[in-house]
Image 1 (cartoon, rainbow, N blue to C red):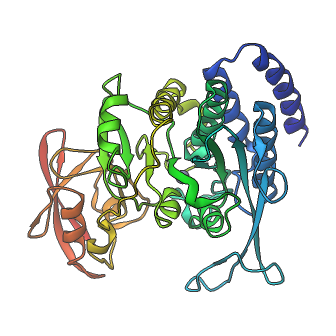
Image 2: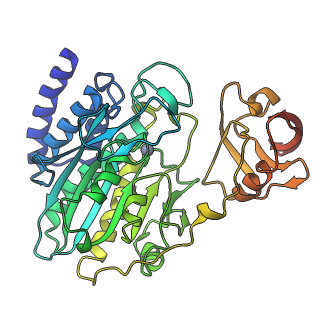
Image 3: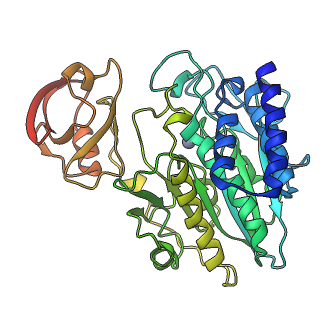
Length: 409
Ligand SMILES: [Zn+2]
């Protein structure tokens, strides 16, 4: 706590300096250092750490000059009824007389002349001490610098920059709570909006934008949710950054909640890595310049669309509905940005079939049993044909050589 207070004093001095000269990179760095510091204990929804993070974001939004758009100033609290039974779904928006968790969304508004609204969002919660969703399975603070202090710092940076641009469109900067548990905060907000959702022209989400590697590229999802997106992305990509685009508006982050309300979305993501959902996702591995590169791109989008008509929503083919179902797991994390033949492994989980078989991070799965694995979909299809206890050969490419291993599920 003492450490946190001295940090607050530093922030105070910092924000005084910032009002004179704004330095994007140092501002992004300070925001991530605070949000991903041990004193916030991993910002798990329902904990003191998440509330402290929310209060910090409120103070930053106030300093930038945004207007509170929550139900209590900048905050919108919501209650989630939870159960000890893992098969029972948490009920978001239940009233507060039963056992459960209170989370806090943070909403800052920029009121410009037009009545169209652009929502720019990023979740700020993370895994606390690890818990069910930790891939390291250790009881340590998970600071979540990339996931998603990076996106949160990016919305604060964008708020600062967009405020000075004097655009026509209104902006809602939304620091979203409870994403890690299943999109709780964005789900609650879209069902209990504090703005008129019918005026929202599009929503931009950033979840993990702190590891930009120009060679791997930047993932942009939701590109099929409005007719304009594809052409516009070409136009604003002035640095010719490699982009991996996917049309679907559904995905494992908060843009999904807005897509389900028929709002065009774009989701920015710099890719999966070996520190994903581990205590090692910390600030020293963040590419600060990369966050600014992503934010600059978003800035060009909002400027380009400022005077245009409200975007027309397009429903995208639901990729999940034709995803095969599987009952076994290999225990690896795919690299979703990989575009070569096969399925590149970004990480291998401890004590799961892949690790036991000697499969390594960086291996590319090209064959499982009788099935060739050409891509992610091929991998999922192959996996769906196995049951617990089955044994099969898996062929991986390692340093250009084919290696065959025996896997038991
Ligand atoms: Zn995330």
